[in-house]
Image (cartoon, rainbow, N blue to C red; front, side, top):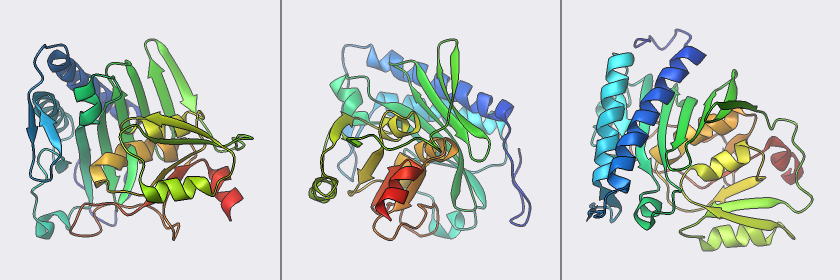
Length: 273
């Protein structure tokens, strides 16, 4: 793939997606080398979020891999986000990565962290890879082509486009924090089952059909959501802003913070309308 004019169509193939998966797995291996060490040194960034040697190691692996395999496409990473808006707003297509999503889960050593790599085109997450190295599980998707779950030698296609809502809806939320606004949203659902999990795995549980809805009313950055949104939407789900239900898009403004959003199977939004 190469950089393309704004008026040209853009496609990513399954073979190219497999290249991205290989890069994510290599990054996961770099993370695991730090994860298995006895001393996890944590540094606090200016925004009070933690960063470890694993974040940096994963970032370096992903950037090197993408630059080698997909020369000419810009890259934005949580660990290299100081790109001026004047430059970034001109990007038609770019990679958006979170080298280690769920650093708090990494520090707790509960295994619920992921490597996230998304391809953004015209503000939309059109392809994504979410790899959980401890779980040795990879979710991937290309919009309008399909989504897949890979564990070992098993590769399953994910499709929730016709999945009915559970009799008692299954709501997935953050393991680290539930905001008051999420609590209020969930209270309006009525009888339901709550599941907690870290990182972008929340989106993936919906994509896998193991949950109905993931409401997020709290701060997230664009790199936190892009890859998993691509997986979920490729599986037939939707990620819409709350409360206006407009699509959650990318690189449309100077700051990189997401609005509130709801990630769910399509039947959920039919039920809410």
